[in-house]
Image (cartoon, rainbow, N blue to C red; front, top):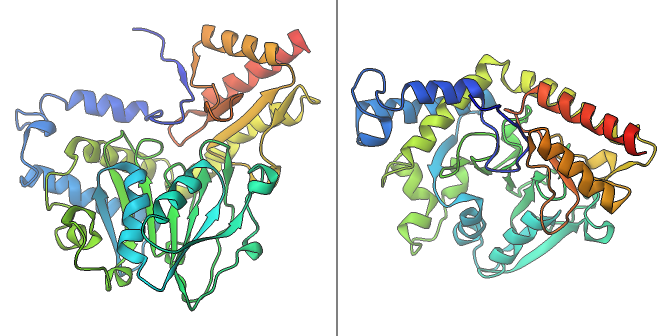
Length: 363
């Protein structure tokens, strides 16, 4: 068998090996039915058990209070950028957005097509090296339709470590790259959405967790597949859902539960990230982090080498030693290590060791 590389891709990203092995074992014959889960009806008993169990596992892991629904949609977070203002940004109301980087910007650009949109706070002045302070977020509660944040910016590597709260203003969060990586208080949020392909499973399914209260006044004229009520009323089974992606998400949720839930993962994720951040911070300037320490992500670690040629050499060495996905996003360059839930501690230790050894040889 070929050596399994150290996978630091930003998405699609690493999946737990145990999940992949179980999926492999069940690929042709799911639990003795003689068929793959991809071949059976989404109305079948076998699939509905997977579907409903995945919803229940989300509720359990997040400790969702009563009044919340877990939905499975398609189209990625990018479709949510449009659905949110279509469903909630009514005439006379304002969509408020915190500008933290590329993904927040994409959400803002889509919202502007549907109604009045304002930037409630921005990190642009410091080149998105720091998440705006919660106290800097300015919202008019009387006119606000909602406040939208991107909890973790995958590209520049910043993360909210506390969340804003403004009375009577629904909080909406794109958690595509840090969902289920740490405990949160879900009651703070009216809606959470996340593409699956970073922390939950393969691409193809988008999870939406919403407070039922928020969908009371959705416009009736919306296209059926862009209306949240379609999914709440039909248990995300109005049309054929991405059954195999949801099946893998179900397995990943069980894996999370077996590994200590969100509290256990938060501890492990902090330990993994510390290995790499320590290699950066203790390098005497050989490496530099691209986000201020108070805003650093535990999921996407962005950094650079002080010399461009050495940076290229480090990437070459990393590739030769079976590290993949360390190139920074094309819009910012440099280096990025994505340390999602399924990335093993051993992979992060190996990367830190590589960085330290490379500095000793080239410093």
